Each structure stands twice: as C-alpha cells, then as structure tokens.
Image 1 (cartoon, rainbow, N blue to C red):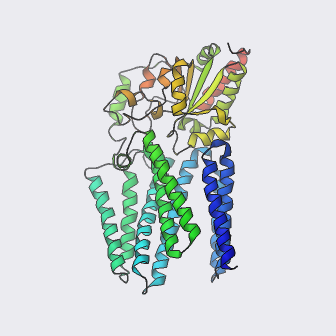
Image 2: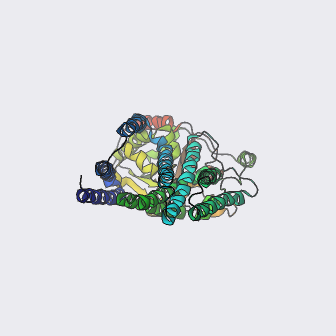
Image 3: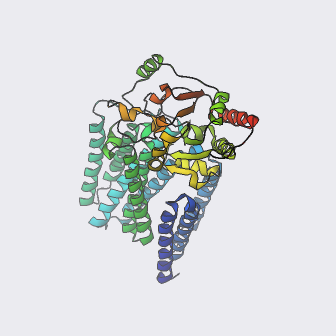
Length: 467
C-alpha cells in the first residue's frame, strides 16, 4: 500500500475517533460513538499493518490470537458491576504495551539514538510503567482483592514524590547519556514503584477520578510514542485519550469539590476508623421498615426520584428498578432517576447499568438539574448510593466529604434507603441520612427487597391519573 492511501485512512480513523467522543458525550448516541471508535481503531491497525513490511508474521498472528482468546470472553462475560475493574485493566495493558514498545525502540536504535528520541522515550516509559502498576492496584481495590481504604503512613507523600523524582532524574541522565543502558531498567523499576505507592494511598471513594487520571496518563504516553515512531494516528489518538481523560478527571474532581492534589495525596477515607464508626452508630438508632411499608407510602405518592448507586449494580437490581418504575408510572406517578457524577466506581457507571435495563434516556437527570426537584418530591428511593447522598458533606467541616456536592435526597418528603446494613461507603464516613426522621431504612439485598416491593404494589393493583 502506498503512503498516500495510508494517510487518507489515518485521517478517516482520526475523524471516527473525534466523532466517537462527540457521540459518546450523549446517552442517546453513545452506542453509535462506541461503534465509531471501534471502526476507527480497526482501520488504523489494518492500514498500519499494510503500510509496513512485516518481518515476523508468526509473532504477529500469535499475539493476535492470544489477545482474541483472552479478550473475547472478558468482553462477553464481564458483568456491569465489573466494568470499572475491566476499564482499569484495559489501562494497565495499554500503558504496559506502550512502555514496552518504547523500551524496544530504545534498544533497537542504540547506539545512534538522538537526544530528542531518548528524551521522549524516557518520559513515555515513566508514564507508561507507573500507569501500569497504578491501574493494577485500582483493579485490585475495585475487585476487593485488597482493602479499599488508603494505605497511609507518616511521610508517604515524601516517599512517593522522591521515588518519582528519582525516576525523572534517571530519565534526564539517560537522555544526556543514551548509551548507559543500565539506567533504563532502574528508571522503569522506580516508575513501577511510584504507580504502586500512588494508588495504594488513594481511597476507594476516589477510584472514579483515579481511573480518569490514569486514562489521561496512558493517552499522553501513547501520544509521545507516536512522535518517536512518526505515527500520526497514534499521536492524535493518544492526544484525544489523554485530553479527554484529563477533562473527565477535572469534572470528577469538581463533582467532589476536590483538587487533583487532594485526590492523589489526600488519603481520603483514612480519618474514620472502624471503631469510631461503630461507636457513632451504636449511639443512634435507625427506623427499619419492610417493603410492604414502602408500598403503602408509594400508594399516596405523586412523584418519585430513584437514586442508584454501586449497591444497585452489585445486586444486579437495575432490571427490578426499571420494573418498579414501570409499575409506578402505570399508577400515574412521575418517576425520574438522579445521577451523581461519581456514583459507582467509574465515570458514567450508573448510566451504563441503567441503559442495560433499557431505562429511557430522558428519565436520567444529572445532579444540577435534579437537586431543585427534591423538596417537592414525595418519595426518594436510594438504591445502594451512600457517599453521594450523605448530608455530612454540607454540615460537618471535619468530614472527608465536606464540601462535596451531593444529591439533596434528604430534602424529599420521604426517603426510602435500601441497603444491606448501616456500614459506611468507601469514604468510611457514617451516613447522616440513615438517622433522619423522614428516612425509611429497608435492610436487605436490593434486588430481593425491590422484588418484594414490586410484588406488593402489584397485589394492591389499581392506577390513577396524575392530579
């Protein structure tokens, strides 16, 4: 294939990537955006393979087969609850691939490698390797393989930043002395260690933002490698990935009223100990109710707002939530869904889970639009959301959540909170909403409790027109 057609195909891929970001910015066109990105990547890969002479076809075919065999069942079998973990591992594998290609390019170009090339390679390898271990730790926390609370100790930020500083210093030394091959593995090892230390010290409540930041790092490292390889589509794709990840991280931090520095080095979730939480809970009591009690309240409701959270995803209760909404709407009740930007374990997690249950897009309301409606809402049903509904974010200055914008669930006339227990969320903060007089706590598996609620409403039958 000549160079001109390849450039045209690269342009087509870039256009498809840009369109995919545009389409995925809206729920209604997100599926089209996904297909656009897939098509763009397929064209980019095939045109690149056609543009260069392949020296080892056996290795290429073998790697493709291994990736297909491993990737296909992961894509087909991973449940909606595990999408954040799967995203973290995608970042891990992608960043590792970029870092390893950079290392291979360095060794291949020796001893005639120039200053610009080794400088860019050093930077992208540091980013790639730290993103790999950071993403692996994020996966382990999200999967529950290690505790979600931050691993903090005295002087942790000094240790972490010193590790990064040493890696950067070695990268500069390597750029000035490119033939000193022994420096590269040491630099890579320090970058791997920094990624490990960085994410270990971040609490589970901040994982959505961490995933976005790691996504940005992976994109930047890929774009840098594109300059070395003189691959325009890799430069553009990496730049799009890096910038979109950065913008998303800014949005997520804003949604939590937090700075990047606070997310990365604040250790949120470490201030509240298990002992202090249990003591605070023991001093107060909650009002426990049954699904039958909730059905009685819903009979007189005119408006309902459903607030989904990670607990709904874990229980795989999204389909029962949709069934409940259908039953309520047939009774003439207005139903909306309140979506907090950081609900769940990754950006847009609740949108993905509810889309799986075929919830109409127009019923999904973002936080800024839905909050003014809570005071006039008869019933707010919270399904597994915790930190994003905690009034302590408004009232307790010593709380790690203080200042974070939340869903104003407590302002509804009645709050139904479906949860297994009164245990705190990832932030480790006891939820003040549990103890309010207008809150009805329904303890149990979300799917089971909602199924009982739907059955109770159906037994009561009847429908009414909106008054």
